[in-house]
Length: 610
Image (tube, rainbow, N blue to C red; front, side):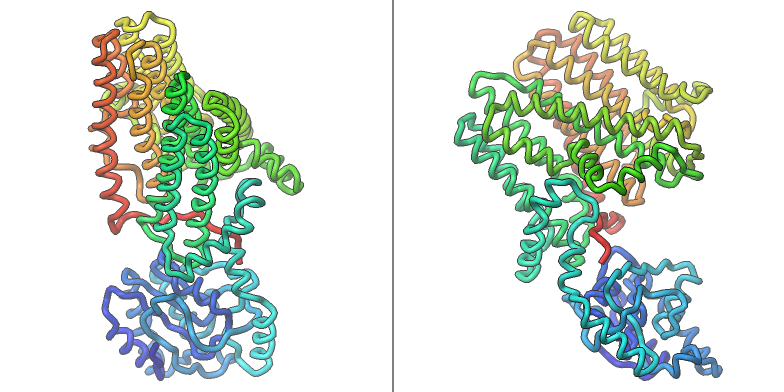
């Protein structure tokens, strides 16, 4: 850490720092908690960030920072003050590259709030200049933490008093826990997992290492379940709980130590699905060893869970930036959230990951795989009915105008391939408030109904697939801005997944359902990957990827054709397996390439405000 005499000296010192490194400006009069500086100066997700009296810039914001400093230096030379008159003359800022461990030295300070654009210190003025130039400056919410630059002895005394009244380590630990989580996670895991996170941080472990440990533990649990023995089931249940504790710990460690990363975002976004699907497969293998084939139930549980998630994703993307987003249903929901017990009841009804994994672990240890899957199907069905009904009511009662960005996100989530896109290119857009979701739903019913009720292997099922392609194209022929157009992606997901499930289950071909399980897992990974890219603000996967794997309608039609051509032949299993491997390879290679690239977002759930 270096000390500059004035703005010109600070500019010279910053210019000597290698271009690829983060730099920080800290007013030497700064008084505040170490964690306040940590939040302001070490979060890797933002190109520039500030708290009162301190400013940081990563490599992409360095040129703008240098320009702002040069303008300030020129103003000083011209006789302009560098601080507001009431604060006194400004002394030179401390400057330098960011400490490797994210800690800051020096005094700590006042019962102040977050950095504000009117911050009169040199770092504050430069932050305002950066924003005026168009460089966004993140200002973290500090809550009870102190960060300020006192102008006189009286303000400094007040600041120090505020500093000593708040334990920033306690705040840091509390902030490591997500602000909104399920009942089981909040009361049964987080009270001690936060201390595990701190233990990991003090020993130099990274969130990615903990995430990987959670995955390995879950895979071992799946292997234990696959033994088909009571001892194996008990071990599987216990290991699954340990895996979930580690799953909570990795996010808490990331928030505790501010170790956000693009790789961490990808691992965190995908490993939960991999762990759950692997455990389902382990249970199914164990059941088969015990003489009970539950592969269809396992695939059904996976399909239901994936469709539940896409309902949530699609609704949120359609409405997160809607204009005039008001609804009596939303108002009622907010009112219920003000009553303590209803908050927890509503969070438990939706069967979040904590409650779901706890249920799976306990039932695995005490009962049979069939009972586990029955419980999952019933619980997830009730949760799906509750959440979908609420979203339908909100959509029908709110007066909102959806944006082009929301419409594009829904189109990306729809995952339309070349066949549907070809139909959409020549078909007129459907008119009417609800015709688009109605067309998608009709196509899904035709496809699933044919797979379910027509003789297996009938070419009429292929004809139904043609109708599905046609209606899918009509559904996306115009921008998805209607009140219920967010239903289109989940309807397409259900149509594709259920069709694959039904045709595999009805084939009577050995191992067809496990092969279908693999295919749906690969496709579901692609759909989750699409969601997290959109959430990170980078858009959907490239169009060539969607075209290569056929889109939802292309894959559905292909499976229908394979069922007709390879009727009652082991070739159907081979074809499903080959399709699963091909989709998985293409999707995984592109996904890994993207998430380890510099353009990938560092996406993580936030903890409570400090």
